[in-house]
Length: 251
Ligand code: ADP
Ligand code: MG
Image: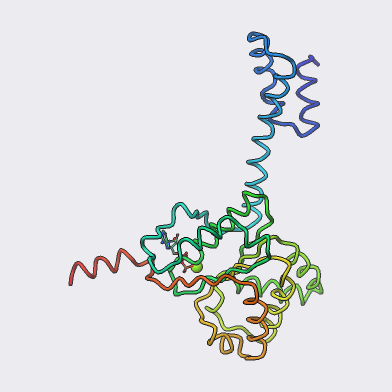
Protein backbone atom coordinates (compact mmCIF):
# COMPACT_ATOMS: atom_id res chain seq x y z
CA UNK A 1 0.00 0.00 0.00
CA UNK A 2 1.36 3.40 -0.96
CA UNK A 3 1.55 6.30 1.49
CA UNK A 4 -1.32 8.06 -0.35
CA UNK A 5 -3.53 4.95 -0.15
CA UNK A 6 -2.76 4.56 3.54
CA UNK A 7 -3.69 8.19 4.33
CA UNK A 8 -6.86 7.89 2.25
CA UNK A 9 -7.89 4.77 4.14
CA UNK A 10 -7.18 6.28 7.55
CA UNK A 11 -9.14 9.45 6.74
CA UNK A 12 -12.07 7.31 5.61
CA UNK A 13 -11.79 5.28 8.82
CA UNK A 14 -12.16 8.56 10.71
CA UNK A 15 -15.22 9.51 8.64
CA UNK A 16 -13.32 12.41 7.03
CA UNK A 17 -14.50 11.51 3.54
CA UNK A 18 -14.14 14.96 2.02
CA UNK A 19 -10.55 15.25 3.19
CA UNK A 20 -9.90 11.77 1.92
CA UNK A 21 -11.19 12.75 -1.52
CA UNK A 22 -9.24 15.97 -1.92
CA UNK A 23 -6.04 15.75 0.10
CA UNK A 24 -3.87 14.40 -2.69
CA UNK A 25 -4.66 17.23 -5.14
CA UNK A 26 -4.56 19.81 -2.35
CA UNK A 27 -1.13 18.53 -1.23
CA UNK A 28 0.22 18.97 -4.76
CA UNK A 29 -1.18 22.51 -4.93
CA UNK A 30 0.19 23.30 -1.46
CA UNK A 31 3.66 22.11 -2.46
CA UNK A 32 3.62 24.27 -5.60
CA UNK A 33 2.39 27.36 -3.78
CA UNK A 34 4.63 26.80 -0.77
CA UNK A 35 1.63 26.86 1.55
CA UNK A 36 2.44 26.28 5.22
CA UNK A 37 1.60 22.89 6.77
CA UNK A 38 -0.91 24.57 9.06
CA UNK A 39 -2.66 26.40 6.20
CA UNK A 40 -2.84 23.14 4.23
CA UNK A 41 -4.44 21.29 7.11
CA UNK A 42 -6.77 24.24 7.71
CA UNK A 43 -7.89 24.16 4.07
CA UNK A 44 -8.73 20.44 4.28
CA UNK A 45 -10.57 20.90 7.57
CA UNK A 46 -12.64 23.78 6.11
CA UNK A 47 -13.79 21.64 3.18
CA UNK A 48 -14.74 18.81 5.53
CA UNK A 49 -16.76 21.19 7.73
CA UNK A 50 -18.58 22.72 4.73
CA UNK A 51 -19.59 19.31 3.43
CA UNK A 52 -20.53 17.95 6.85
CA UNK A 53 -22.71 21.00 7.47
CA UNK A 54 -24.69 20.50 4.29
CA UNK A 55 -25.04 16.79 4.88
CA UNK A 56 -26.28 17.29 8.41
CA UNK A 57 -28.86 19.88 7.33
CA UNK A 58 -29.99 17.61 4.51
CA UNK A 59 -30.28 14.72 6.95
CA UNK A 60 -32.53 16.86 9.17
CA UNK A 61 -34.68 17.79 6.17
CA UNK A 62 -35.01 14.14 5.10
CA UNK A 63 -35.95 13.07 8.61
CA UNK A 64 -38.63 15.76 8.84
CA UNK A 65 -40.68 14.14 6.03
CA UNK A 66 -41.79 17.36 4.36
CA UNK A 67 -44.28 16.69 1.54
CA UNK A 68 -42.34 19.14 -0.69
CA UNK A 69 -39.60 21.69 -0.26
CA UNK A 70 -41.06 25.19 0.10
CA UNK A 71 -39.34 28.39 1.14
CA UNK A 72 -40.45 31.76 2.37
CA UNK A 73 -38.58 33.30 -0.54
CA UNK A 74 -40.91 31.53 -2.99
CA UNK A 75 -44.05 32.65 -1.14
CA UNK A 76 -45.89 35.47 -2.88
CA UNK A 77 -47.07 37.68 -0.03
CA UNK A 78 -48.66 40.00 -2.62
CA UNK A 79 -51.17 37.26 -3.46
CA UNK A 80 -52.29 37.09 0.16
CA UNK A 81 -52.47 40.77 1.28
CA UNK A 82 -54.48 40.04 4.43
CA UNK A 83 -51.70 37.79 5.74
CA UNK A 84 -49.57 39.47 8.46
CA UNK A 85 -46.36 39.26 6.39
CA UNK A 86 -44.12 40.96 8.95
CA UNK A 87 -45.23 38.56 11.66
CA UNK A 88 -44.60 35.56 9.40
CA UNK A 89 -41.12 36.83 8.50
CA UNK A 90 -40.40 37.32 12.18
CA UNK A 91 -41.43 33.73 12.87
CA UNK A 92 -38.76 32.66 10.39
CA UNK A 93 -36.15 33.91 12.85
CA UNK A 94 -37.35 31.02 15.05
CA UNK A 95 -37.51 32.97 18.30
CA UNK A 96 -40.86 31.26 18.90
CA UNK A 97 -39.11 27.89 19.19
CA UNK A 98 -36.75 29.07 21.90
CA UNK A 99 -39.81 30.07 23.94
CA UNK A 100 -41.78 26.91 23.09
CA UNK A 101 -44.50 29.01 21.48
CA UNK A 102 -46.93 27.37 19.10
CA UNK A 103 -47.97 28.68 15.70
CA UNK A 104 -51.44 28.18 14.34
CA UNK A 105 -52.12 28.75 10.66
CA UNK A 106 -55.84 28.90 10.25
CA UNK A 107 -57.63 29.37 6.95
CA UNK A 108 -59.27 27.77 3.91
CA UNK A 109 -57.63 25.29 1.48
CA UNK A 110 -54.93 26.65 -0.80
CA UNK A 111 -54.25 29.73 1.32
CA UNK A 112 -50.63 28.77 2.02
CA UNK A 113 -50.73 27.03 5.42
CA UNK A 114 -48.65 24.02 4.41
CA UNK A 115 -46.25 26.15 2.37
CA UNK A 116 -45.57 28.53 5.25
CA UNK A 117 -45.21 25.77 7.81
CA UNK A 118 -42.78 23.81 5.60
CA UNK A 119 -40.76 27.02 5.12
CA UNK A 120 -40.47 27.46 8.87
CA UNK A 121 -39.63 23.78 9.26
CA UNK A 122 -36.81 24.05 6.73
CA UNK A 123 -35.43 27.11 8.52
CA UNK A 124 -35.42 25.04 11.72
CA UNK A 125 -33.65 22.15 9.95
CA UNK A 126 -30.98 24.55 8.72
CA UNK A 127 -30.28 25.24 12.39
CA UNK A 128 -30.07 21.49 12.95
CA UNK A 129 -33.31 21.27 14.87
CA UNK A 130 -35.19 18.00 14.98
CA UNK A 131 -38.39 18.56 13.03
CA UNK A 132 -41.27 16.28 12.08
CA UNK A 133 -43.98 17.19 9.59
CA UNK A 134 -47.07 14.98 9.80
CA UNK A 135 -50.62 15.24 8.49
CA UNK A 136 -52.96 15.03 11.50
CA UNK A 137 -54.70 11.90 10.21
CA UNK A 138 -51.51 9.89 9.77
CA UNK A 139 -50.03 11.12 13.06
CA UNK A 140 -53.16 9.95 14.88
CA UNK A 141 -53.21 6.64 12.98
CA UNK A 142 -49.61 6.05 14.01
CA UNK A 143 -50.48 6.76 17.63
CA UNK A 144 -53.41 4.35 17.49
CA UNK A 145 -51.08 1.69 16.04
CA UNK A 146 -48.55 2.44 18.80
CA UNK A 147 -51.27 2.02 21.43
CA UNK A 148 -52.21 -1.36 19.94
CA UNK A 149 -48.59 -2.53 19.95
CA UNK A 150 -47.97 -1.19 23.49
CA UNK A 151 -45.41 1.36 22.31
CA UNK A 152 -47.50 4.49 22.89
CA UNK A 153 -45.33 5.87 25.70
CA UNK A 154 -42.18 5.42 23.64
CA UNK A 155 -43.79 7.10 20.64
CA UNK A 156 -45.03 10.01 22.78
CA UNK A 157 -41.54 10.38 24.23
CA UNK A 158 -40.08 10.60 20.72
CA UNK A 159 -42.66 13.23 19.80
CA UNK A 160 -41.85 15.07 23.02
CA UNK A 161 -38.16 15.19 22.17
CA UNK A 162 -38.63 16.88 18.78
CA UNK A 163 -37.65 20.52 18.57
CA UNK A 164 -40.59 21.23 16.30
CA UNK A 165 -43.69 19.22 15.47
CA UNK A 166 -45.71 20.37 12.45
CA UNK A 167 -49.22 18.98 12.28
CA UNK A 168 -50.90 19.56 8.94
CA UNK A 169 -54.51 19.36 7.82
CA UNK A 170 -56.34 19.17 11.11
CA UNK A 171 -60.03 19.34 10.41
CA UNK A 172 -60.48 17.49 7.14
CA UNK A 173 -61.35 14.21 8.83
CA UNK A 174 -63.66 13.58 11.78
CA UNK A 175 -61.74 12.56 14.90
CA UNK A 176 -63.05 9.79 17.15
CA UNK A 177 -62.71 9.86 20.93
CA UNK A 178 -59.57 7.66 21.03
CA UNK A 179 -57.82 9.92 18.52
CA UNK A 180 -59.05 13.03 20.33
CA UNK A 181 -57.53 11.71 23.51
CA UNK A 182 -54.24 10.89 21.77
CA UNK A 183 -54.15 14.37 20.23
CA UNK A 184 -54.60 15.84 23.71
CA UNK A 185 -51.66 13.74 24.93
CA UNK A 186 -49.43 15.05 22.14
CA UNK A 187 -50.34 18.64 22.90
CA UNK A 188 -49.87 18.29 26.65
CA UNK A 189 -46.54 16.45 26.19
CA UNK A 190 -45.18 19.44 24.31
CA UNK A 191 -46.89 22.14 26.36
CA UNK A 192 -44.27 24.68 27.55
CA UNK A 193 -41.50 22.36 26.31
CA UNK A 194 -41.48 22.44 22.51
CA UNK A 195 -43.28 24.18 19.70
CA UNK A 196 -46.09 22.84 17.57
CA UNK A 197 -47.07 24.38 14.25
CA UNK A 198 -50.64 23.43 13.52
CA UNK A 199 -52.49 23.96 10.25
CA UNK A 200 -56.24 23.87 10.24
CA UNK A 201 -59.22 25.04 8.24
CA UNK A 202 -61.51 24.95 11.28
CA UNK A 203 -62.15 28.03 13.40
CA UNK A 204 -62.10 27.44 17.16
CA UNK A 205 -65.88 27.38 17.53
CA UNK A 206 -65.93 24.25 15.35
CA UNK A 207 -63.35 22.29 17.35
CA UNK A 208 -65.95 20.76 19.68
CA UNK A 209 -67.73 19.38 16.63
CA UNK A 210 -64.46 18.26 15.02
CA UNK A 211 -63.45 16.24 18.11
CA UNK A 212 -67.04 15.20 18.81
CA UNK A 213 -66.43 16.34 22.39
CA UNK A 214 -66.46 19.91 23.79
CA UNK A 215 -64.48 18.98 26.89
CA UNK A 216 -61.49 17.47 25.07
CA UNK A 217 -61.60 20.24 22.45
CA UNK A 218 -61.38 22.98 25.07
CA UNK A 219 -58.64 21.12 26.97
CA UNK A 220 -56.61 20.92 23.75
CA UNK A 221 -57.28 24.56 22.82
CA UNK A 222 -56.42 25.69 26.36
CA UNK A 223 -52.89 24.26 26.15
CA UNK A 224 -52.34 25.00 22.49
CA UNK A 225 -53.34 28.66 22.68
CA UNK A 226 -51.70 29.59 25.99
CA UNK A 227 -48.42 30.41 24.22
CA UNK A 228 -49.33 30.78 20.59
CA UNK A 229 -49.03 32.96 17.52
CA UNK A 230 -52.24 32.76 15.53
CA UNK A 231 -51.87 33.52 11.84
CA UNK A 232 -55.09 33.72 9.84
CA UNK A 233 -54.58 32.81 6.18
CA UNK A 234 -58.00 33.90 5.12
CA UNK A 235 -57.34 34.79 1.48
CA UNK A 236 -58.09 33.04 -1.82
CA UNK A 237 -56.75 29.66 -2.94
CA UNK A 238 -53.44 29.79 -4.77
CA UNK A 239 -54.18 26.36 -6.22
CA UNK A 240 -57.09 27.61 -8.31
CA UNK A 241 -55.92 31.17 -8.91
CA UNK A 242 -55.35 30.61 -12.64
CA UNK A 243 -58.80 29.09 -13.06
CA UNK A 244 -60.38 32.05 -11.28
CA UNK A 245 -58.42 34.48 -13.46
CA UNK A 246 -59.67 32.67 -16.59
CA UNK A 247 -63.28 32.77 -15.42
CA UNK A 248 -62.99 36.51 -14.77
CA UNK A 249 -61.57 37.04 -18.27
CA UNK A 250 -64.54 35.21 -19.80
CA UNK A 251 -67.03 37.32 -17.84
P1 ADP B 1 -52.99 25.02 2.26
O1 ADP B 1 -52.06 24.18 3.06
O2 ADP B 1 -53.46 26.26 2.97
O3 ADP B 1 -54.15 24.23 1.70
P2 ADP B 1 -50.74 25.17 0.47
O4 ADP B 1 -49.72 25.83 1.30
O5 ADP B 1 -50.63 23.70 0.30
O6 ADP B 1 -52.20 25.56 0.98
O7 ADP B 1 -50.78 25.87 -0.97
C1 ADP B 1 -51.24 25.21 -2.15
C2 ADP B 1 -50.21 25.36 -3.26
O8 ADP B 1 -50.08 26.72 -3.62
C3 ADP B 1 -48.81 24.94 -2.83
O9 ADP B 1 -48.16 24.40 -3.96
C4 ADP B 1 -48.15 26.23 -2.39
O10 ADP B 1 -46.74 26.18 -2.57
C5 ADP B 1 -48.79 27.23 -3.31
N1 ADP B 1 -49.01 28.54 -2.67
C6 ADP B 1 -49.99 28.87 -1.82
N2 ADP B 1 -49.96 30.17 -1.50
C7 ADP B 1 -48.91 30.69 -2.16
C8 ADP B 1 -48.35 32.01 -2.26
N3 ADP B 1 -48.90 33.05 -1.63
N4 ADP B 1 -47.24 32.17 -3.03
C9 ADP B 1 -46.71 31.12 -3.71
N5 ADP B 1 -47.20 29.86 -3.67
C10 ADP B 1 -48.30 29.63 -2.91
MG1 MG C 1 -52.13 22.12 3.14
